Amino acid sequence: DFDRYAAADWTVSNTGVTPTNALVAETGGVLLNTTTAGATDATFLQLSTAGFLLASGKHIFFKARIKQSDATNSDIYAGLIMTSATPLAANDGLFFFKATGATVWILRSIIGGVATDLALGSTAVAANATYQEIGFHIDPFGTVEAFFNPTTGNNPVPAGGARGRVAAFAPSLTQFLLSPSFGIRNCASAVKIVFMDYLT
Image (cartoon, rainbow, N blue to C red; front, side, top):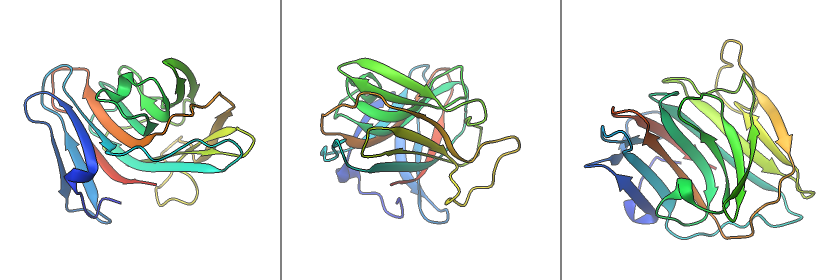
């Protein structure tokens, strides 16, 4: 929970002149991540030491609360990814991803560079300046459930939007140690921002 931010705890990989990552005054603590204006500028953060394993036969849970300035013209991700200077090009992980030109979130399982994607559906979409909770749960049998604004959260349901378990699949899962990771990359020549409330 970003009621504090210790930069030394994170590996920050930036593209551009001066992307920034700093706390802002908001209830519960929020980390503001701001790119510079180049068409491919980015800021990516990972916990410095990988320490999470998608262990077979065990429950695993991840959730994040996130808000973005541009839900269409940017790449945004949050989840568990192997340590990499370029997390979006990493070969292994399980993470949420919203690609430029789209607003639908996908959950991506990737092993050795081969990705298996699960779209969360047309009601589980990113929106400008709107907090959303995205989460996944892996059960002991390997089923991966995706959640959007789950019922345990505090977010109002968007008009026509989804809440709760929205999709599921059973992909193969990497056995690399992974790090909590998140970030944003411009896909247009303009500053983009992401507010990260927490990673669970």
